[in-house]
Length: 279
Length: 123
Image (cartoon, rainbow over all chains, first blue to last red; front, side):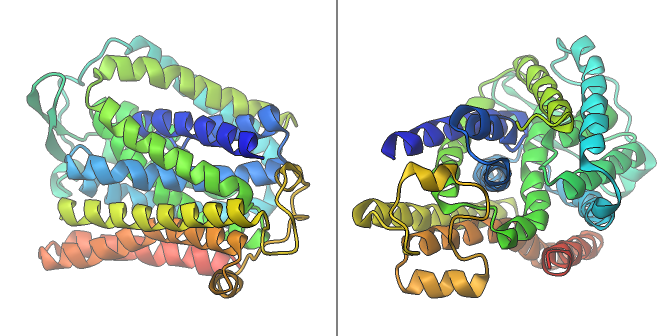
């Protein structure tokens, strides 16, 4: 018994570290570890991954918010889009085949990783001009970059596009019960041209709210098995704390090199799930 | 504002982790789930829906008061789920205190939508 719990704990710890630095919930690691690695039922695995998303989010955000890397305004403003999207998704969930959705969104995610590859060497976005919305809603800010050893000033742009993509990320969460951190980072990084660290930490801040919105459903359904949830939550929380110490020491270019393969792994996992493979 | 939100998140996470650890400890000592099951890997690998544990807030509280290990763990999970909700609620108050009405209303809308999806769609 103890060996099972230890495997889950340390696997979740790794998921927490990666999730905390890449702005994801760690489900991409937790689910296959449980299903393929240990043979846990997919429903229990997904219930555990919801717990993992909330643990990564709250655990990591505590540090990122304190260090002023997370942009609270941008996060809260975009949460309006993700929660509206999550409700839309939950309402139409019965009308569409989830397997088709997994494939469609998996392919969409894989495609959106392409521009990231071109920008692998980009440390900070350049030549960004705030649009009317960013100015009106004060969507910008500054954070101290410990690696560059200077404050980084930034502005958001293409806010309606970012908002729309966030709505879509919310719909996906509502439909499939995932944190959709990868979609959130992409919306902020690619569409709104925010610095990578602001994008991943603000995504981290947001995914807890997204996951909490659907957590009630999974909890009530009895998908949160305590024997799995306890080591997952404790492992992910420990990992998230370690991850926050790591992120400040990383270059954004390094962060991108970690993020791109993770996005591709998530896309692959979604497509496989759509094809009926239980990962 | 950032400092308060950060402390709030830390607080939620610390309480949750303490409850989860206590539940696990009790589980290890007693070897029982509290719901007529001896703890074994079989409970981990069972088909979903076959492992008995409470799935309502009332059931969890009742079980936790009776010191049933599985209920205590589920209580820790509930605290964890509630943490982001409290964070949004606190932000509403903080934005209004900072006289940032636009963001106060905006965050209030988020809170309303969040509660709607938990308590209305969740049923």
